[in-house]
Length: 277
Image 1 (tube, helix red, strand yellow):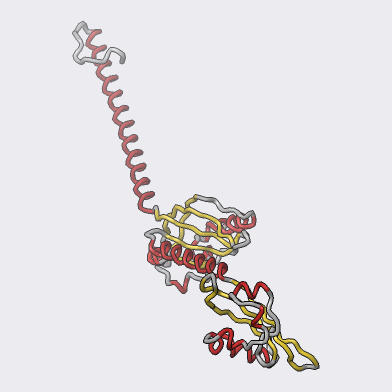
Image 2: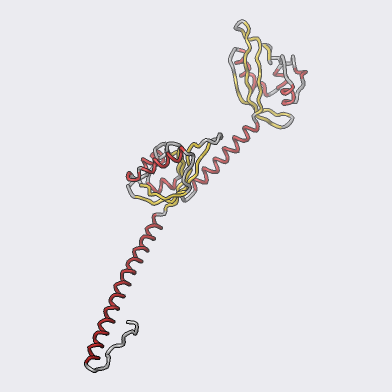
């Protein structure tokens, strides 16, 4: 606690341990205990609290265990509508700050990786609105980022005849799952279709609740066109094989008939014909 003269009126054992002081600071001025930190970190907020305002702020201070991060709250205590004391609550948030920083760095690395992939990378929220996409998707489809971020993925990219895809997405989100792999076409700004092979996963918040999906997609249009061309060529070869086999059978039958006629006339056969024919 701090009184109107900005002197410590009370400190508990936790405060003393946290800052490496003793209960002997009671009665001393805050400025004398906190020295240089007082002017730029403490005084402005303490003045506001002494004027009757609830104040919360963050501060960094060197302690016996190293530099730590704190959240400081000033709660004015009043008597007859006048402030008589300020209750000070200090919370060490160093580990929380470190976790937040580690998470931010992890998210930055993840986003950087997604941005640099020569594959489609994107995230959707629970309703199917695009929350992130990389440049590769924009180059592939011809859209600008402002045309994609914040817009419904299914309205923008899924062909009208595949409207059931969004229904399936929403059903999976309700079950908090998503198909890990699937293929479907997407439409470009020009109206062309590109076949995409997807790898999907759900995104969860810190409480484990599903907040959306993350997907990486490979453009397999050229591969599928090549596969289709190979299938067509194979079908053509099979048709020619059937035609040639039928032609050979007719030739053998004709040679056999000629040999039969010659045989009935007492003449030797003219053609060699396979025995099994």
